[in-house]
Length: 394
Image 1 (cartoon, one colour):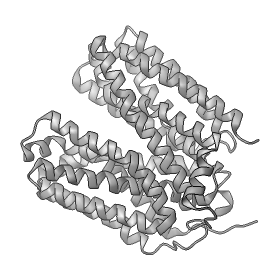
Image 2 (image 1 turned 135 degrees about the vertical axis):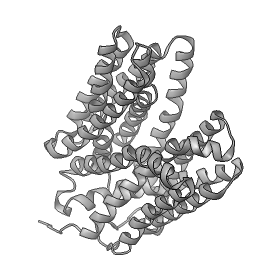
Image 3 (image 1 turned 120 degrees about the vertical axis):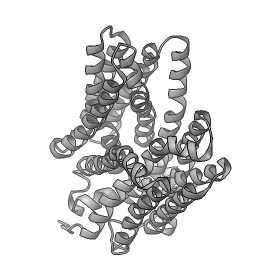
Image 4 (image 1 turned 135 degrees about the horizontal axis):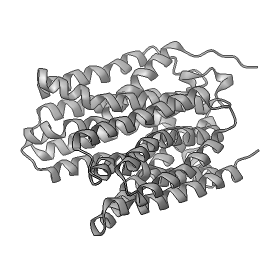
């Protein structure tokens, strides 16, 4: 049996890189008010910047997957962090909306490179080689827990830093955060087999293999329907409860509790999920998604709605990392970066389109009734989770 040990430098690089990627993901939402003040722009234009960031990673995560297997993961990951650093410098000093728009494009492109490579390097960072295929869900849930911690703490830290040292110096502090993984990555053995597996197929041939694999399609479409459920709760949870008479401060606290249960469920899943139960977990959580989204639609009390929002965090947390663990376990090592690219691109389409439908329907009815569309997404997620179990090799 191959018992190659983990590279400790890779593990440390992965921890800091995942946390830094989480910071980047939460950055625009955390700085939108002082950034709008610096640029003298309204909320609509700020929303445009956020949308550009989201739209950028639909094609760029896919492109990063191809590049990672052509020029190497270290080059793509390093380039991603360089782009993030450049974008932070631009955000610190640029005063025109157009220049900041280019900065956000760079930020989205850099984050896309990070998220592609880091999803592929998470298993060897947290598991010895001989356990990767059997404990993939442990590694992915642990990695996404670390990423989530970065996302969760960013708004709080940014508010404190801006208040104490100002916006420009805050960006410099974030640049330091982005430099640390690059320095640690210089000490990683990127030629190791787990990081640099033999690629036996051309770009076109590899994509053809993935595109004709039903399990790949089922995983990607399941993610397409999962992402809108997460986005809907993150976007409208406070509206749902304030419409029931909950105060804004209590609603804000409730949203924090939602994210804490979201993170805790990933850590618990990493530590407690038995090997071989990955698909069972996704099916069970997808079924519970139907239950809580339906409960939100028909809830008539503030207490029930608040309870459902908190439970939603625990239910949603492990779905994405477990789903991508199933995908990465299924595909060959040499195709994983491309598989991650396809997975995120299709999920990104769901992330941008379904919430728009929810918003349009909510405008005609209410946010609560808009969650009917979220419930339909949950039903589709459950269906594709069952199809995944049927189609996976046994």
